[in-house]
Image 1 (cartoon, protein in one colour):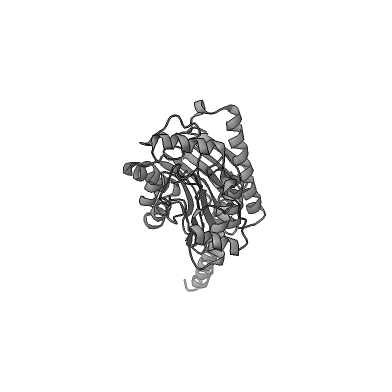
Image 2 (image 1 turned 90 degrees about the horizontal axis):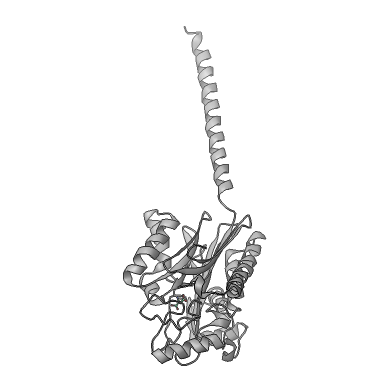
Length: 356
Ligand code: ASP
């Protein structure tokens, strides 16, 4: 019997070793599996949500929107593919949309009641939770660049009006004559809105501010969210706000936590919609908080905020988001949202109406 003891011990030891190896192998396998499933990087953009109906769109306009959305997202995709940062991808992608008159941001910004264009923007770095925002500027060509510069080069988070413009000048950002932002369509929209003396959501006809005569009421704010190869998330939003706004009105776009939020622990979000409600609902941060504190998936968190919280308050709009695992979400409670996604395989999805 005694002679069996060393043999049994050796056998048990071998069995244990073997088993341990198996466990290790299994772990590595599952890790590899997770890594394969998780995209290396991802990018999502929006060009505004609202009552965007196919019956109001010409094939040419639809093609123009799709082409610009594709051009914009490919800029960010290429940055991410080459190992660039999500912040750079967000900023440069938004620049393309800011430079196009198709969207209510930069060049295509809507008019205020005083016939000026006052632009808002913000950007957030999910790694450091650092953020930058500018509000009510009239001479900065690309407000998202100003937001980024405020984040990187100042000790503040938000600058507004003349002060923000002085800072932009000091930092060598491109300034333009305010007339740069003049577009005939937007000016006509203001005249129509003024006739009715109401503040209307730039691209919505489902609200109390509905004006069926405003054909271009579907144009909107732009935004971008991205996950880079280093696992860093970033979000940015840029807008002209709402047609006929007055008294220095500022919407959700430059408000960190409402229009923009990014946190490497959860997700990156950019909003578009009726700003007053998005501020009150703290839309972007709320989605992140539902993930962080309640353990919800990005999709479920976005659904609760956009399909329940915002409409329950009386507001509408949508968001784009990407989480730390590269899951991409585009959630809206309006008839449409200009939107696009691209994953690390270069697969592009573009949508305008509710069903693509
Ligand atoms: N959220 C923007 C604002 O209220 C409007 C938009 O999304 O177009 O200023």
